[in-house]
Image (cartoon, rainbow, N blue to C red; front, side, top):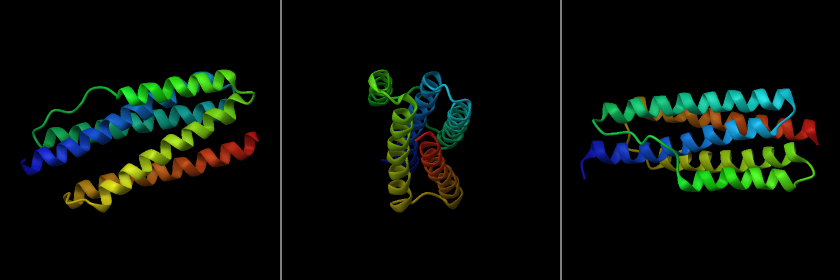
Length: 149
């Protein structure tokens, strides 16, 4: 397999995860009453949309076709979040817990990709920047959890 295809395949996997995260945050916004948490989720959704645009651009740079939607697994996670929130006595705390779980999974994927990376420096820098933003989001979600607890 040629180098460009290998890179594009890995970036497409991240792209799909970012589509899933964006949709998850949009769904979470609908379930939350607290305006601060709602705005936090809105900002995260916008951030993940930006990540997706950046990854799409990189994939096109390598002459490959970017994916255009999320995964079935992501859809199932969003449905699980909604269902769990519906039956929870503390809707906002439950959604925040699920947000942390999803972000930790994303962080793990970015870390794995960066640790095994043979990417050009420019692409590594982009992925590190995105990973660092996800890590900051995890810390922010924890702060909101403490405030709501």
